[in-house]
Each structure stands twice: as structure tokens, then as C-alpha cells.
Image 1 (cartoon, rainbow, N blue to C red):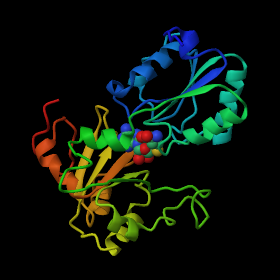
Image 2 (cartoon, rainbow, N blue to C red):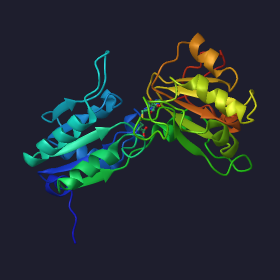
Image 3 (tube, rainbow, N blue to C red):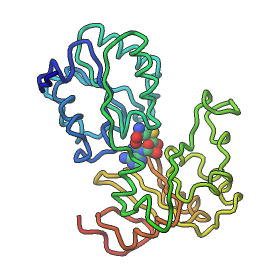
Image 4 (cartoon, protein in one colour):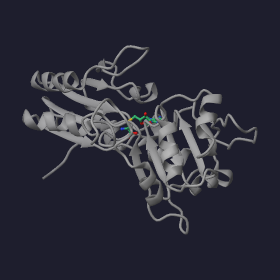
Length: 278
Ligand code: SAH
């Protein structure tokens, strides 16, 4: 089978590509993502997709925003899936562009299931997830020989459907005490709202209050802020410095490497030390 890079092959009319946009820096787009974005005639995108990434669309590509911005609620998930189906059935070349990786806490699986049910051809273009790129841009290696041999990725904001306890979105179906004992390094997405319960749970499980923690906001963008603190202090420090989502929280000894490995000019609100070079 030969493979060419014509738009017909990359994204045929009537098909959908679920594309990971990465966390913000367009350098983190894959070659596959750039190809698909160049072939799409309509893109359906979320709030966490940066303008620098959208610059890779062709000028005549139609842009449909389905995220939450400026206090307006986000478009409901079923409406997004229906929109993708309608566009594909109309013969469009559809790119569904999602922040980070589409299958990491991004509901990409749900959208792909809807496309599969409707027998709409689709492809998946993985992206660099914020929980991996953010720590790297902050100078934090998520694994380091001699320190940890595993790392866990968690959401601090489970939906009612996935929470075993039911109810509104809550972090409580995860046993944070057990998780904190099991995983030497934790990477938390969507954790800012429930940070008090999460950190208390982890400490109740035996993790020391002086365990290093980093909160990385707007990771990989020119506005990246990296707050370095501890498990015991993180809630107060986040409040003092007014840190809001979107942020990745990293918990574990590997955070300490930032002192040596900081390479980027990301702002640290608690320190005056010189930033990295780039
Ligand atoms: N699919 C995305 C995650 C979507 S969930 C991915 O793979 O990265 C949304 C959460 O991701 C945010 O609440 C935040 O915790 C995290 N996130 C996404 N982009 C981010 C960024 N640029 N900086 C910090 N956190 C980010």
C-alpha cells in the first residue's frame, strides 16, 4: 500500500481526526498533527488549544470553538459529538483539536465511540499531554533512577458518571491516602478546586508535609508559572499567589531537581532566583 501526503489521504472528505494539540507551545505539535491541520477544512477546538497552535490552520479553514471561556458554559459533550457527526456526514474534512493528548482526561474516547457508532471514518493523532510536557518545561524529571520506578497520573475532578460514590463532580472516589502511599510521584490534572481534600488525604496516608510539590500553570506557554512548595503548604501558597487553573500539580521528591534543572524563563512567584536561559 502506498501512502501519500495528499489531503485525500491525510483526511478524506467525510472523516474526522481527533488531534492532540499539546499543552500550548506549538513546538510540541507532532508532524502528524501539522499535516492534519493543513488538510482540514473545519476545526472544532477547545479552550485549552493555544492561538499559536491555531496558526497552523489554513486561512480558509472554518473554526468552531466549543470550549468554556469568559464565564460562558462549555458546549455540552453530546452536542460536540453531534456536531462532529453532522460535519462529517456533510462531507467535510474535520479536525477535532483537543488540548494535550485527546485520550488523556480529554473525553476523546467518548467522541471516538460516537464516530465509531455512526461508522464515520476517524483517525487519532496523539498529542503531548500537559502532565508530561509541563514538568519537563519546569525542569522536573518525572522519573529519576534511584528515586522512583513509577509515576501516576490522576484527575482531581471526577465526573459523576465515573465516581463510584456518585453525586456531583468530586474527588472522593479516589482513595488519596492509598494513592499517596503507592505512588512516589503523582501528576494531578484538574486538581486545583479540590486541592485541600486531596493533599489532606495524601498526608493522612503517611506522606510527609515537607514532600516537595510543584504547581505548573499555563505549562509550555510564554505565561508559564511554576510554584514550588510542599504538600503541607501548597493550599496556602496557591491562595496567596492567586494561582488558578489550568495547572498541573506534581507531588514527590523529583520536584527537587528543578533547582538544578530549571532551564526556562518560567516565573516562580515564591522565589527571586534567576530564571533559566530560554
Ligand atoms: N487532554 C489534556 C488534559 C485535559 S483535562 C492533556 O492531555 O493535557 C484539563 C486539565 O489539563 C487542566 O485542568 C489542567 O490540569 C491540565 N492542563 C491542560 N493544559 C495545561 C497547560 N497548558 N498548563 C497546565 N495545565 C494544563
